[in-house]
Image (cartoon, rainbow, N blue to C red; front, side, top):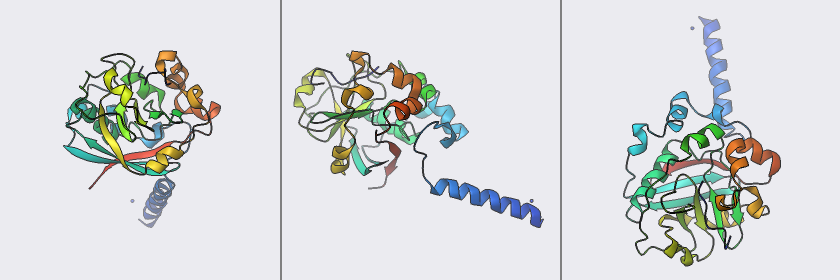
Length: 242
């Protein structure tokens, strides 16, 4: 699995029934995403089927030249601007994961002060399992470094990028030479990223190089919420108009 290097580490009656059903549905939607447990109920049958099938044609759609992705979190919102020219393969993968709700209700499982915020293990372990081994070829680092606020895919070795991404909390230009190619940057709400709970450090799902993510991958949100209840979460991520 991926990781940033660990070194820095129908009549009246029928109308009444319909009204009740619609009202119940509206009330459910108005409450927003649930804060823990099983995320499968939040997904439509179609979207879940796509998430469980990384070979589906929907995953081959290219990203726009630029796209703003809004993350609503338990601490507030932040926006990542994806720039496809920086890292086309990474941009396409990230935007498609957002389009199909992969990151919704996931946890920020690795937050290390003065280093990174990392996420990308799905809240639903079945979805995480479906994407295990679905790696990307590397994008070259083309003069856009890992400075504060830049976003890149995590990996363990060349050719192992999959779904996990990180935001650099400080200037991490030292990662440029290791092949971490940014595909976007936080353009609004960096203070929210800075405020995400970091009290667990590496213990809540540190880098795979340390072999510390298996429990998260296998248990998903249920595991994290039971053992690391203060982790902040992604409510939803959506592409927004600029």
